[in-house]
Image (tube, rainbow, N blue to C red; front, side, top):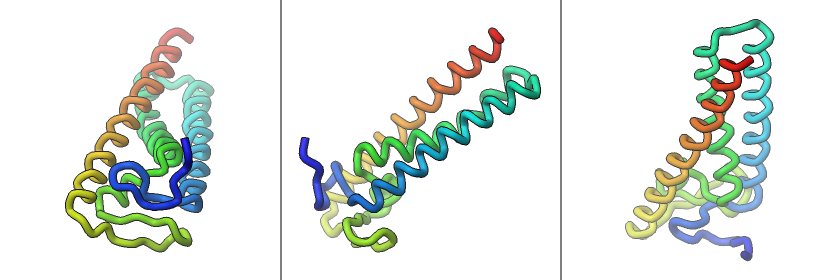
Amino acid sequence: MAISTEYIPGVCNIGADETRLRLRLGLMGVAFTAACAIGLWSIGAGAGWYLLLFFPAFGSAIALIQARSRFCVHFGRHGLFNFAQRGTTASVGAEAARLADRARAAELIRRSALLAAVATVIVFLLALIV
């Protein structure tokens, strides 16, 4: 599949610079989430504390999913796109395109929450076992 270098409603709303940023943030989030899990394990925290890992896991998941899909949830919800220098945006004009972007943003949020929930449950269950 070819990588788009232009805005496609509901499909792609960020370019290479924005994608790289989200990938870096997502990988940093994975490292942070893992460090938190290790920290909880090292202090002998109760299993319930591991449920808090959902929040950094969600941040990691949403950043990585945005990088993979080349679609920014924030931009999609606010009718924006960016294929230029990072930090600049342009407005989506057509209402149909804005609706497609909002639907895609909601889908990515749902996918991120599901991924974060699965990861959190796995770590929670491991905490019960160990």
